[in-house]
Image (cartoon, rainbow, N blue to C red; front, side, top):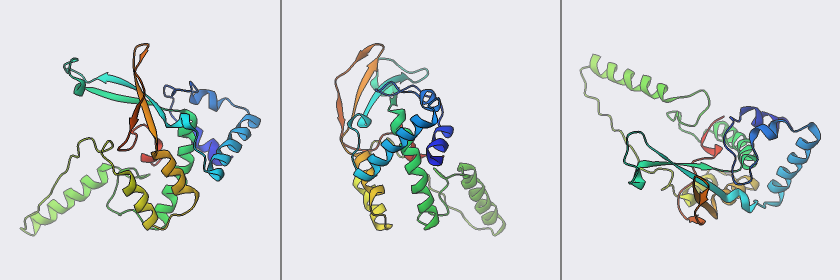
Length: 213
């Protein structure tokens, strides 16, 4: 129960997904209802059955400031997914990050998606290297990468293979496999919805597996 309550307390109020359930609704559940919800999550975890509706996302295109509205590339897609699903993901993510940190699977130089770390740490490291090179009269080469559509082009199988090589077995990698598979979305503009599309590549941007909290 602690994991569930902790996950709900860390959730920020967002628009609901296709099921219409909000975080505010979940936070107002009484103890009995939370117990039923936890029972549901445990069944999904143990029986390895991922609800089909959790694969669905509603995408709302938001025009970037000062951009031409006639160009589809000038819109930022905001995906709305089930708050129930994201609550469970937050619980699973906490376990995953704990194991990754404990086993030393994450490079000490990585700051993104880690609790208590930020890009400021990398900037301080870079500044230190620059100062050291200046003092020693050496050259310093720094290379920056800006990967376009990084989420959309992520290799799903590579994620699962990496977890396997790290030694993860059992329900956790199976849950992640189900999470990444059979994802669909439809676009909403006002009150109008498009047909459903299948997301065959990449990973969804709207979920909690890419955040440390």
